[in-house]
Length: 536
Ligand code: GDP
Image 1 (spheres, rainbow, N blue to C red):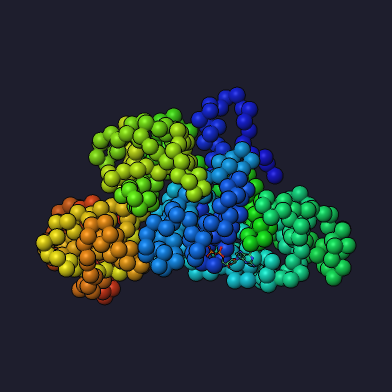
Image 2 (spheres, rainbow, N blue to C red; image 1 turned 60 degrees about the vertical axis):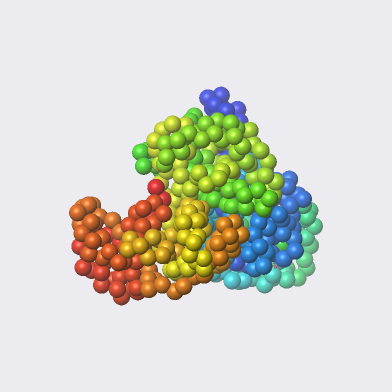
């Protein structure tokens, strides 16, 4: 296997490209309960953030204050927010972008996946590929994000190893290369064989904190467990090495092949192998597409895009934090950046790093890092920041809502305030807002109903606006566009009662149902109806 670990002594490298090369920015994708939270805790242990273990969980009593930001989260015991955790291991800087577990907030998750260079796919060894894993995998595939697989819960009853690998290959159309191979299963699970270097790591006797494990020769396995048929283990390994494709870095980086690790997050077993694999194989920050050109990570001038806005992390201050992924260069505290959408400069006086749970003030951050930029509503999802160049990063999507509701205000005197508040909420990505051109009250669109609960709670708490949601005559929204401006104008004029403006003033066709949408679409020659919009 080629050594692609970062070399610090290459004389031609500038410090910037060295800093960039040692970054790994990733997310974990999984179906609920597969073990994402547990694995996150264990990964943070490796980075020295030991006090965090057992505190990442946003359920139950052990919640950390950061995810405590809203009552609704507390009441429902779910984590609504996306957060960022940074830790160092083996000279590398890992940025782990957390995603909400609940599928009602999947839009947040999709946007977060635009900000990573790779993903770890966690699979429950007893369950295999589940619905949400598959969906999130598809989002990764759309963006060519390379995937490393961690098959978790090996300490429990699990499915046959070949069968699991086969399921990944077939359902995801993704080649697999096991980097470790389980020895024994369920109650008899002894550990994993290191396919690359040989030797068996034993589950028992591992250090709880670092996951350091004893490694023995395969011939000695029988001495450890007299019930184990060593010949059978050897046969299985021989079969595995014959059946599995060798690891190919290029195929992995292109998203066609996944290296697979087996372990138990709960027992902190196999997590070290996974982290080493991530360091060795996962790409350093990649070039990002913009409307003008590809932007290379090691370019000296800073550029970044906002993929997430989070409000009220500190309930005492009404702060909004824009999470920005740095695409190139270096961001220093106090520097000025151009907000390309408005053309105005803003001072980045207190960008924040998210080292584990503490928000600490950073002096500098490099391409691949995520910084939090406090602001009072200046920044929106999809915004680009540069050192002057007028480019805009593409690919931060909006998705057509699954649910559309009309907002009813109980106090009609507050209509103007509601308008402002809804604009703000849609810029933050809490909900989408559609303003009918015929002057009817605003419509809000969401992917999952919990988003409506969040909106209601925030309008009440932050703007003293009690609202109700009513079923509207519309249930679907599609962005409409055309190469021919006249055609678009004619369509809009002919369908005026079904046209609304989105947050950017782009036209949206609102339909009662699928049938009506299909009927209209068939007759609207030259008009494109889209259920995804790239934020510009
Ligand atoms: P998430 O919903 O994906 O974040 O999953 P959690 O990390 O909350 O894990 C779900 C449940 O599975 C919890 O009860 C964990 O303790 C348990 N769990 C996680 N990893 C393992 C593992 O490796 N082995 C076993 N036996 N249980 C695990």
